[in-house]
Length: 439
Image (tube, rainbow, N blue to C red; front, top):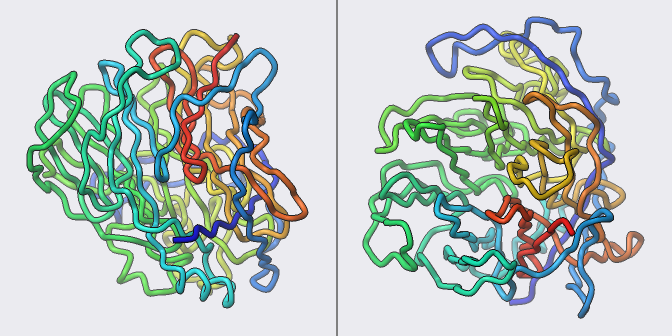
């Protein structure tokens, strides 16, 4: 099937706020509150008539051409010839798992979206629904082993290893498989331990996973089923949340809510603080609403769909739920409107220069709802003592081939730090895992 891909994004901004919170025990209704409402981000006025579209066309990477990293780094192909590599997970033993999955949108639906100006149209045929194992035991940047580790999944994204269990988050549920370190393939039948609401608006089908430091809790990200609640909030139950469960799937509670589409999740080094990358809403103009990365407050509410960036009210919801708007937390760092910032990884290696130590890398996949292409890169935010310490900056660029025509070479998604200290970047539309290493 022919692949159609379209993209857009926005200029980056930087905001770092440290709102204190009040924790309450009941998830959902009892939410962390903003202690200082003066910490609202300065944003343009919303305009529901200002939304513009510019779709991109993926042309692929010419021979010999790669993305561009800062001076002092090399960029090479770590692995290629995959079908839509979306996410990367590094196992405790150093094995690297690549999740192959896509949205499975039909050509007919894509064409309809183009005509009506609805969601981004992305067609990549049937999803591979496979987890691939890459093993680079000698850490020379060339995997000596590649296997189809687990197949027959349903739009997988997050994977996780805890002890002798291998977890996969499909779009409709969390599965658990028997596993032991060093396995090159899983053939055993898994067990579904948690059902999840499937699919979602645009590309909100992804379900990501992360465990806490002692593996006693698993966190599951679930995006919204709509742009701004237009299908009725009764259809958003357990969505736009990060859920917390026990490793056996029991004990579910809402850890944080009002996160329109949280995808990337990572723990800030040296802290017990969970961070996530969130895709914000469409339809309010070129520069609204900025996507963001933020620390996740237990019991926190982040506004969706009633407000954004704290108490900025969405005009399409006409003053609904003022009690929730009053509790909406201000995210920590703006990373540009419509950038589709999906990947998130803190640098925990030792090979990059000191400025990158403990900083956050963000895979900006790009979107459609803006008049000019932007994003399409891996961005970086420096951190110090577990908090952002400087503005958003470019790290891996060169994905846009022709700004005017809208031609792009690829689209970065998941990011991960390899055992050898290199950064791995999944470029789903070019079927490539890029490796960025310090010289």
